[in-house]
Amino acid sequence: MENKFKICLERKKIVYFSRGPRLFSKELEIAYSDLKSSKDSLEDENYKWATIQAYYSMFHSARALLYFKSYREKSHQCLIEAIRVLYIEDGLLNYTLIEALQKAKILREEADYYGEFTKDNADCLTEKAEEFLEKTKEILK
Image (cartoon, rainbow, N blue to C red; front, top):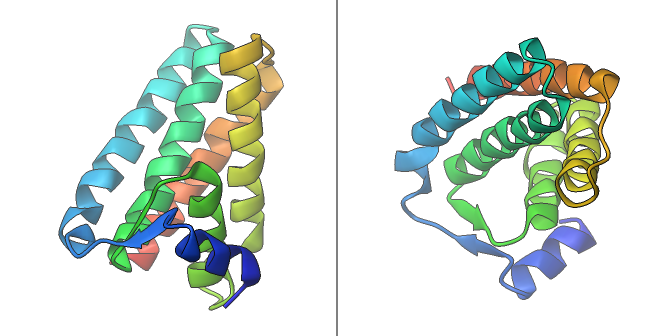
């Protein structure tokens, strides 16, 4: 078990969540809705919201994966660490998608807190969010 994930468990930033396997499909629905909103925002040239919505689509896809394993996050960063250990180390998820999630987290914070965003980043994140959601659905079949 990777050290960062272990620290998240010890600090209770990742906790056991028995209801997770019953709720992961709801997270997928939210991920899909956020992806659709991101695409709509791109079409409207609202790149700030497209960036934020793409991140949250990826977040909810990741959360669905975590719920499936009966865990729940109490930290966005620990969610990323958990997915890295539970899905990437097992070869179920490509490392590029967790890198995209990490980048999306940073870009979402820049857009949300500092008003810094671009069309290119919004486009890229929306594409990655769609790829992440499709891979998540494939894993959770």
